[in-house]
Image 1: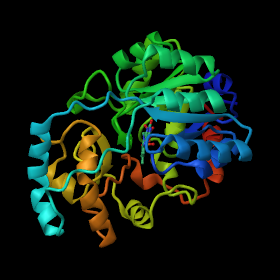
Image 2: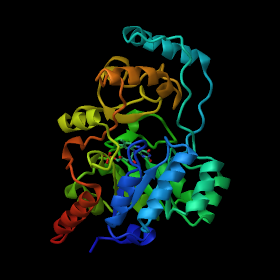
Image 3: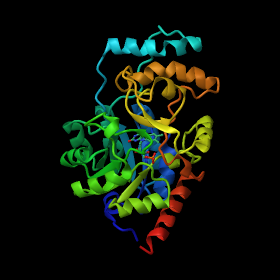
Image 4: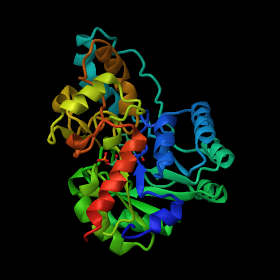
Length: 356
Ligand SMILES: Cc1cc2nc3c(=O)[nH]c(=O)nc-3n(C[C@H](O)[C@H](O)[C@H](O)COP(=O)(O)O)c2cc1C
């Protein structure tokens, strides 16, 4: 049925499609729909506190008994760097003035905490079948607890070195995340965006370098991309951007409209929204301050500084400061319910693979 069943067997799923965790956008509705369709739905917890994550997990466990993935960021907490923060404030000053905001008001605190003991307690409580991390892995003790909870552990690699690093530290599968991918680069051994590798080149090199199953991610949005990923040796795909227009996603109406109108060359890798390289739609902030800025403070402090600009301009119907993540396959969307999209992608891929 599929060129290889390694991911299907590992995760006990029927369709080798993982709906990418998408912080703030992929909550219980999408997860249930994708898992019920036989794929692997992923709950993104990076922007949820423990209570919010618990209530999403309660909904999911009530609505499906199929395997699910629960996803966390595991970045190092940012170093305090007052000089850089002042520089970032000054860089944004003119926008605060333009929008009538007080640029000297303290920045709101960041809402992105790395995976910790409390979130790990939740993993022990709900026993998700899969736990995925972005930006490396948590420390050994947390890893051991997640393993004891019975979860398969996966994480993103953007290079062969990162893939080997993840395998050596106990990952059950590795997500090879190519340069095309929407959202944050999972990179953790380097932040040099100039050397990041595209999906087509990355996947087979990672497949050759590790023994665990490889999941291809980045720029995959239809059966052509999924078939290609299998041809490159992947055992599954992780798809993000193509799920953003599903009715179950928490994508705002303005974000949806921007996705519908976007062109293939209207995304960029930028650090101006959060302090860490991520691929999103090009807007005024990216054009004028980025795409990469040396003044941006460490992840996630840059985001906290921007929050007032973002909310004020969005209220006025502007996307000048909105971090609307999207990958390079932005035009390949279909506006279908997430379960239907998953099933269609699987059926069309099998059709494509049959004569091969
Ligand atoms: C809107 C958006 C939000 C994302 N948020 C997360 C996240 O919270 N955790 C994570 O591991 N990956 C996140 N990613 C990255 C995805 O896991 C994946 O690498 C990417 O979506 C694949 O590329 P594609 O968007 O071209 O399909 C996000 C991607 C997008 C598009």
